[in-house]
Image (cartoon, rainbow, N blue to C red):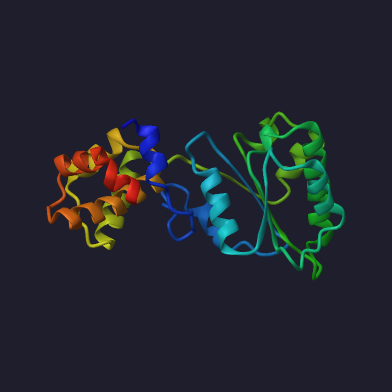
Length: 233
């Protein structure tokens, strides 16, 4: 069974701020936890740095409107002209570098609306992600400057050491202590996504209990080859 199929069979849990592994991003995560209406955040970093994870974790925390390159410009523009912030106190925009000219115009208008409301009872929070620093973004000039209107954070990818420690802690919290050999195998052979790795730990916990066996690398391999078990998870 190939790795992509395994990732589809063992779905990752929805991201939350509590499940977010901090690594070198403590300041960014603290800012996300303390985000209040009237504030804006811009997160940027390379692929694998957790931009979308953090954005979706924020959106899970409170009623939010989620926008990305698949969003209709008409819907996006309505948020800047007819949006009632009392119904949604958070607007999140993922991967702004992938947006069309029409969508960029909508985000520009949305930033203006956010600033106009920032000190009123209609204030809402705005969070945007991109793959590079504001002034390096391939966007219209007036939108680039708005990305830096409030707090900006570069997100650093988790190191293997961070992932190892996070997996070890997560597994111990599930009552499933894992040996260094098992943890190393998971990091090398399964996925680089920490949420997918957490989901693998959950599945391994179920499998070891069903087989009444201690978790070892051979047991982990046996689980990943057991189609009936995987399709029942």
